[in-house]
Image 1: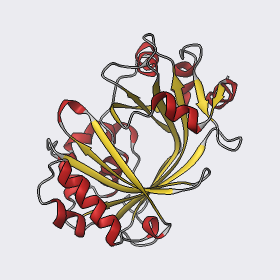
Image 2: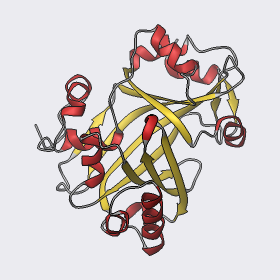
Image 3: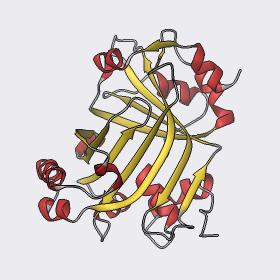
Length: 268
């Protein structure tokens, strides 16, 4: 049975019920890089009662994101050098379900990710941030203790776009606490500072699985572990930009880049 067939055999869950059961805006994330042929064995390990998000009859929903950074790449370098207080700013569009949101993710102690977001119009995805979005980003960065939050927010510009299809799982927990997981396929990146015919990267055979739980590992983590998969160091923004711009500091993602990322078009 293929992975896609397995997803279609799961019971559907609505977005409202998914968020009510496991919103998890403050959470611990773990990411895994698999091949498509690895995925069916993992899905076969999911516990009874696992559900998949369904919107308008679709279970693999299209996502598009535009990442913002300063000209000096403060966001990227914060991740590359493992700075204790770092951030990520993106505008994400839910292509099938509708709506675009500006998301500010900050990282503090104990590996916890805190994400806040506000709705934005299509211009917030295609172009730079307007005054309201800059003010929102500045406030969130300052609240997280990011140094020079306001000047950073004022200098944010579009750097990279990503696109993929995503299945979102709701998994039961042994203690009654549900957890979430996402499965991303058809991954693609575009460096917005590269010429039109270069700076693109696609990974048609790769799958990024991300688990989102509280302090303890969830059912999807345990399914992955039973199949021999361990968390990988990967970020759609930072690892993608490192692959597209080989001159950037990239030691943090060296193993992931060597194993899973092909040479981008225009950088052969």
